[in-house]
Image (cartoon, rainbow, N blue to C red):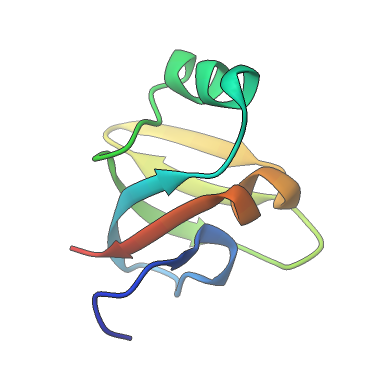
Length: 78
């Protein structure tokens, strides 16, 4: 993969990525900000599937995101 944006749900496991864009409304952005996931946050995917939850490590927090939310978060390689 190169430095292009792709949905978090398609991210390879154990790769350091940067959140670049959140394609959602105000409520989604607010919820993600509340749990510490903003544009610029460095994440590492621990587990992901197209129909189940996406588990990421952001700092020292493990976050579990639904697949619908993970499709709206765009990341790129760090």
